[in-house]
Length: 415
Image (cartoon, rainbow, N blue to C red):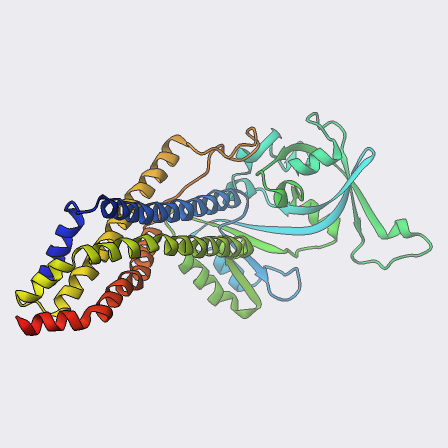
C-alpha cells in the first residue's frame, strides 16, 4: 500500500510527457477545490442566517415556553407550576395572555395580537433594546400603556408623539351575540401608547401589542387564566435538562417548548433549504469529478510503459491497479483539502470584512451575508467528496485493466 501510494504521489507531482495531461490534472484539482469551497461557503451562509434569525427570535421569545395541549388557556395554581417557579435554575418566571383584537386610531384600523405580560417581561426579553421610539413601560402614575409593533404603528399612523390613545375592540367572551344590539356584543377600551418596538420580522412587528397582564385579563374577561408561562433560566443552566424536568412535573397535558420547538417551522424550512442546496452542490461536484476521470484516463495511457516495466519487475495486477487508484484519490484529496482551505478562508474574510453585501440600501438587519463555519459541515463535505470520488477513480482504472488484462498477463508470464 505504501509503495503504490509513493508511486502515485510521484506521478501526481512529476512533469508529464504531454503538457495537456498537466493541464487536465490541474483543472481536476481546481474543479474539485472550487466545488468543495462553494459547498462550505453556501452551507455556512445558511448557518449564518439561522443563527441571525434565531438570535432575533430569542430577543422576544422566551428560552422556555409552557403551553396547554388541549384548549388555549389554563390555570397555574397547581403544585407543578409552583415547583417550576421555585426551581433552582429559573431566573425569570412570568405568565402571559394572548388574544386577537381590532385596533382603531382615528380613521385607521388593523387587527393585532394583544399580549398581556407581567412586570418582569423586560427581564425575560430584550424588549428595551428593541424599542424604535418611546420607552417600554406597562404602568406609570396609575396609567396603563401599550407598546405597539412598529408595523402596527405604521398602519395606524400613530407617529411618535403618542398623545392620542388607541381604541381596542374585542368580542365579549362571556356574552352571546345580541342581534338587536350587535354593538353590545363587543367591548371597547382606550389605551395610551408608550412606544413602538421592532425586530425587522413581520410576524412580530405587524402583529403584536404588549399590554399589562391585568389589563389583558380584564379585556378578555379572564380572572386568572393564561395562555403561556414563559421562563428564562439562570446563566449556565442546562436547558434540555430543565425542559425534561418540567415536562415530568407537568405530565402529558402540557408542552414544554425550547426556542427551537417554538420556531419549529422556521428551523424545519431552513434545514430543508440547506440540504436541498447541499444536494444540488453535490451534483455539481459530481460533474467536476468527470475531470478526474479524464485526467486519470490520460495518465493511465501515458504510463502504460511504466506499468509494463513494473510487471516485469514482479509487480502483480493488484499493485498496478492500486497505483492508479491512489493517483485518482490523491487528485480528489488534494482538491478537497484545497477547497476546504479556500472555503474556510472565504468564510473568515466574509465574517471579518463583509465582502458580499446583501444590498437593499440598509433595509436589512445586516449589510453583508452572515456566515457561520461549522466543523460538522466541513467533515460532511469532505466525506461526501471522498465517497463519490470512489466510482470516479475506479471506473477508468477498471476499464483499462479489462481491456489490457491479456497483455499484462502475457507480460507477467514472459517475465
